[in-house]
Length: 635
Ligand code: WTA
Image (tube, rainbow, N blue to C red; front, side):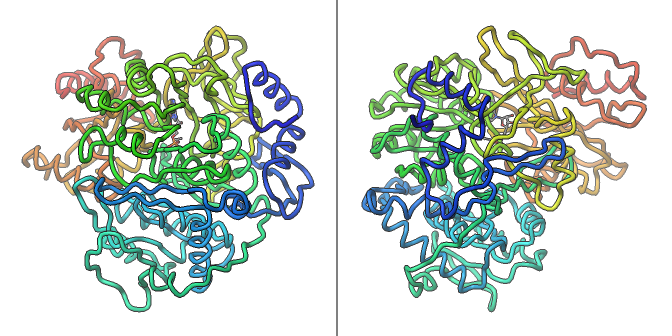
């Protein structure tokens, strides 16, 4: 019997039980039946959760790109691996077969090696959603270089700090990028970032917008001429199961972003397995995930998961609103998309527009629709289910994180009955638990608590690059021996999970994780600002928006508040990116602080939400009088 694909609910429970009772057997079977290995593992899993150390398939030798591409060539060489849908609908789409992808990746891998990139070196990829992005990712993995993709909406200083944190030797970028009716000067952003990045010796530049850009002698090279000269023969690096595959940065509640490190074999097995089951992918289906490859969703479910299954995956360069609000639906029709995976923020934005945009299209090719990135509210769930899924496509609400590598809790289509706003049941191998404030596990159903995972799974992040102590402190010490997700959840009467949101200082805006600390740091750099505090408040489309409370220095007091607000938002855009801009800025004379000097964010959150009832105990505040002022000045 194969464990790779779950066919019905009874089988789900059977596989789930097996995966908990005998994880070694379960994952050993999945891994040996569905992948090509140079050498088998000695042990399926070895771990010490208290010390945050986990190893999967130790002793095995493998190359993930061999599994993504080479092994499909005999049977599926002519099958389309990637459909590239450009930003401009008048530009023809590109169909890249597995044979062509193989050729492109081999050439790129040879270019990287020619440029001195070796196994273990870090390569930063800062590219728009064009085929070169996926090809660069795969070329790195083929030669054992560790890719660090930085979302091409991040600013130059965010890019620089990510490059420096993992000491990249190379940056792969493009002249520019298209986003709706705008173009962005990506190369200019890279040039600015690299003024602060001593480790980068080479920049490879793909052409996209064909704008003239300055090229620095000895450092910058156009990519295409190098590819033209490169051979299509490339021997893949033989990797250990636990060799680093990639680093991907995610915001923390404090300090600098965390470089989550994912390794090779466990990530490969789990992303392939979850892709197959959660999207019920069948051989000739076309799968489309609208995320950017700069986020974990794109890594796992545009690139690795689909290609490991020999699937056809869509890379979409554009945005849902360009040239109009029908774009998603038009692309689904154009390419006969069977599985569609997007974010609640996109759904809410489209649901605000006239229904005609979606009703014009029958969308009859769709079989499964999915949601990721933040809790999907009931209204958005129904709109998506009714108008996109036509009430016939199961809607999979998938909960997971950059840190988890793959989807952890989700319905399986045609297997798990769905329930609006519920991520429902854990995947095999995943053991979620809810914890109370006293750090005890909450048993039984109809309970709420902090969501933890109590047993390792193959695709979990192994560490934070360069800072294992921080990894341990952030994820494994709040509830010793368990992985703490930072999310709160409830478990209903049948054991279904519903994620209620973050319980830490991370705020999810339009599906992007933003830590409060880096935004506050950016604001505090303004010469007129003395101190600041950021909280989230509910927003119709973004899910949450940012509300900033700012204390000015004397020199700021006489200045025009509108101009100050603009300058502050510009600072945030420069330091982090436009996604982190504040929707509301309230200037205050003080912030509510406890006697130990901690800002009581709970109060700031309530004011931002406009909920003046029940502030709780404010007697422990050093300055309780400030609460009244803040309430009265609410925007
Ligand atoms: C949130 C994205 C509710 C959650 C894959 C998590 C969700 C954070 C869901 C991780 C969902 C993601 N329902 N909340 N289906 N999916 N989240 O690292 O708070 O960008 O901790 O990974 O997004 O965001 P990240």
